[in-house]
Length: 67
Image 1 (tube, rainbow, N blue to C red):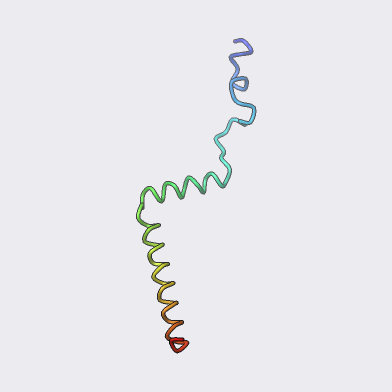
Image 2: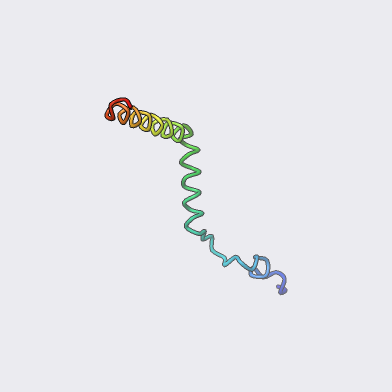
């Protein structure tokens, strides 16, 4: 076995050997997988938020006397 056959010589210098990912990467992978399983969830949440804002604006107009 020569020096070029060793595993640590083949890995990039930033790779420490284990498959550890930063926590942000794990969170990104979780949300990517979750949204791929539930593709319309984001759209539904945005529509609910828009409806809630619209109701709040209407309630504010009614409570202020319509001015």
